[in-house]
Length: 358
Image 1 (tube, rainbow, N blue to C red):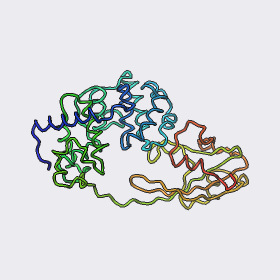
Image 2 (image 1 turned 180 degrees about the horizontal axis):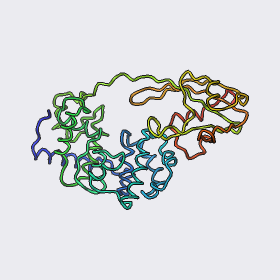
Image 3 (image 1 turned 180 degrees about the vertical axis):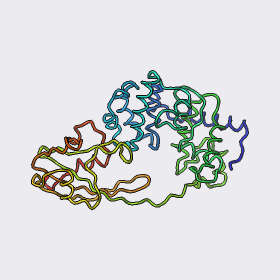
Image 4 (image 1 turned 30 degrees about the vertical axis):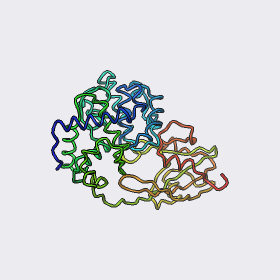
């Protein structure tokens, strides 16, 4: 259990943090200029499990194509996923699109201001709702993203894995305690900035404005907190991806299931690791006489949160384009000249050379 804080401690913590942010905080982030509810909402969804430096170029491209919630709601999911390609965690993009349609159809195109109403939108959890409410509407609402959890766990030397229910309850209590009544938007950005730039996994304590009250620093145990949860070893999955190439250089892709890994994205056909070329052609309805050459490429490794994927490409060059696209709902595309959503791995597979002379 964390040590109790008195009201004056809350004021002191917030004031020191705000004074530091006034001088050192990030004030030139693209969603801050202008800081509209729509731009804040899009940025907060993108920032879930993704660092600011990674998000910035995607944010610029996304809002250039979808400048407001009406533009986003009126677009096809394929185009939304296309502009998300490479950012990962694609359920965020699907939820963003669903939420935009809901807001336009049921709320007159106006994002709600209260955290409780924001949490009704797909993909918006407690901390994200609070961040949007605080930064877009100036409503006092405590946040608890990964950066804030780290700051508070160290400030209070809070024992227990940060993801455990008991620890989370205490972290939310502390987040509520420290959130000031005034300058809520600035405070919210300040505590996130502190966790992102100073109180990092490898902490930079000399530059910390709240170092003097940090219990983990006082006990010289900063790197111990927050305590990690025990995770089972990652499993390894092996899969084969069949890259069909027609005489015009087009690649064949099919849409993946709506949910799960890369849900709703397009990909070369994915099959079991022991799938042979002959069996794939038979199940795909492709005449073997159309095959010009085949080549098995080197295994490509791709990491996910709970497993690692060993993806082996099999390149199948064809003499003519079979009608598989029409029969199976797939498409023939040219790499880099399409508007479909592809995972980073799919882009790599499709761009890779199919034979040594390519």
